[in-house]
Length: 325
Picture 1: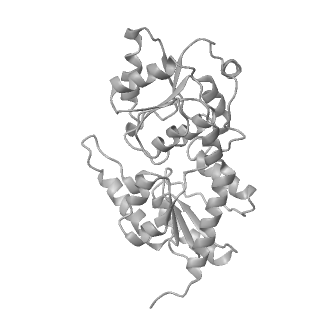
Picture 2 (picture 1 turned 90 degrees about the horizontal axis):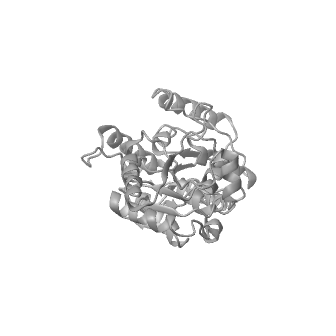
Picture 3 (picture 1 turned 90 degrees about the vertical axis):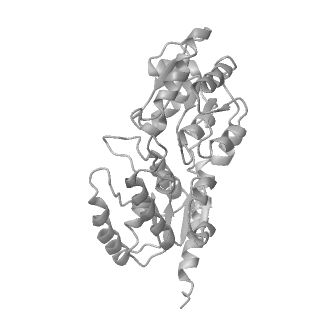
């Protein structure tokens, strides 16, 4: 998970976290294991990371995503693994059963967790999905931080002018890849379609592939953000929206409930088009702006970077202890 020229939004939160760590004084070197290019990237990474860990002066390895963690086990440095969602929770089919691929990837993630000196999870749900009590004890719940100097409140009309949008259209922002089944575009479309018959005209504004530093204007231009996913870890778009004072209508996925409760004016709804439509009506007929200051204070990238550095120190200390025979 790391931005590329073809997809600058993919893994942008990982790149942002590394920038915040660098700003906090950590010397970061990125070794990008681009599994989307080829599954062979993972076995290649095994030898490459082990070689770099042996030859270069690093204090630890931090692997992002469970599958990447399983490919970076073969070295003697302290290891931190961050899990992001389906690497612990799996990917369900329409029937609710996990796919064969995700079951295999979860097993690899569990193997990485067992080797790790410290573990970071996006939510309590993810930490509880670790099968071993010893691994859960080493797991820290730390969501991705948000650069609150970038993702901050702004004037809606000015943002719409920059994006070439009209001033009066009601826009329900859906900042997800529409072809990703678990994001449930069908639910979002069904809910927005129900608004018209009750006299509330709104457009489902699907936004994907936008460079990360351009996203604040999309949040500022919208009237609310809609999240309808079957499952999430800690969806960054929800936290970014709240930091921009944009209300959120969301199903109960991942840690969304926690952030919504910090910013009254948003709506947590059942995973049903009728319930989602009711939540949208409440928000769109309200002020369409909330006070996200508490969220900004909690999730600022500087604060999250400090917590991650504390995890690094714990991992290094644990790794240096004599191993029981």
